[in-house]
Length: 303
Length: 228
Image 1 (cartoon, rainbow over the protein chains, first blue to last red):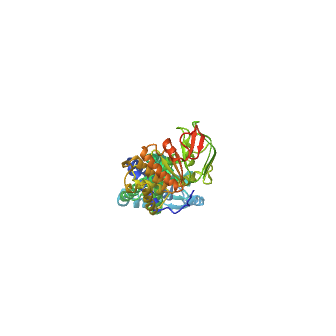
Image 2 (image 1 turned 30 degrees about the horizontal axis):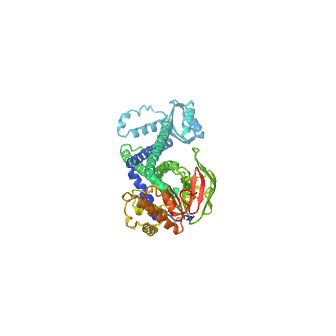
Image 3 (image 1 turned 60 degrees about the vertical axis):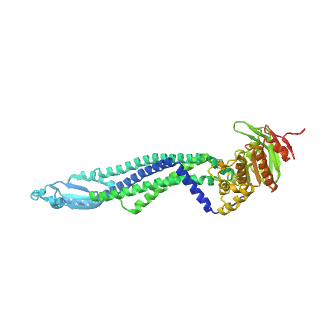
């Protein structure tokens, strides 16, 4: 028996692999289109939820760094009590930044915020209703709530305000999107893999006679397998390319319209964050195709 | 070249196809395998190209044990064996040339090797003019000669033919036998299962008769029926 060693793959063999793969795709064109579609939809959903999560986290991060506790003081607070409170707050380890804003400054800030419509505030100078305030930033966002509670108990303090709930809600939202997106995506991924497996099974079935002949002529299992693997990977990759294109252009146009209408929304536009995600989607598409084909071929080629 | 020692094959449905068969086949022999349908002829041949695995016993092919052979070595075993079937097993969507070339393609031969070897074997089986024709446009005898060309294009050491004349009329059967005898003359061992008694009687080659999975007769220059 002559057993040749592994020689470099010949060009004619490569041509053969690709020719067979594409012939199969054309032969089962409808099923091929369906496989591509399911891969595209599942990766589209994955990509969109990834973008949502990415942005929700980004917004939450921005909000976290800007969360401030406003401590409104009682009107009757004496200057020495004020000093006492300032020292007490300054000594707390959680406090990263402490700023005192008196009634006068608070009013000026408010007038500034109102801009053109500052007339509404006219007359408030004589009897300023705003309290003296301490503005506190904490080291981390999860210190906000306990610190606010603690400070509220101080005798000089009238009221404590912070962005109650907003940060928590955003983080909840991003967690929810992540879970829902992941569950949908896993279900659709399974559907995509099995649809590709079905497509490949049909291709194998259409060529079972040929495969039988190949095997008695001494073709290796890999020689029989490669065209089907290529076929599956092509279906997966095409679906992934559609999904990546849709996600990318959809997101670009979203960014453009949001930057006009809601300029304060800080969306992620960093390419170094987006590129690996899109590449990951392509890799997943390829993986779906390869797994789907392997499932169909495993049963067929175990002899 | 081939040695079977006490080989038994029992199929999963408890059919005992071969029962303690021992047989030695020398290089360059032309051997007829005869016997009633279901006697185990096909099973014996399938064991030789490892389509089936013996339940018991040992088979040595060219010094290698087929029992201990690993699955990934099987393709290389089959490259040294040419196979011819009763139903030809040609690919209808490929031309005569492509069908023969396929045997070289699947083992990774280059275009140049294919273009050199295929016309030569087609000329040898007398189909040089029909290279571009599709199998459906050929007679049964011509189709079987394509399958012979495919079997020999790879220079096998052994040809296994399972009732190759089963679908041919007497005249084309004789042509096929002349072709096989010629190939055998060049040193290729041939094992042929057949019911064609006239061919066996005329050729006067070694005859091995199987009945119920046992060898009941093994004669040099034998006939289809045992002559008392």
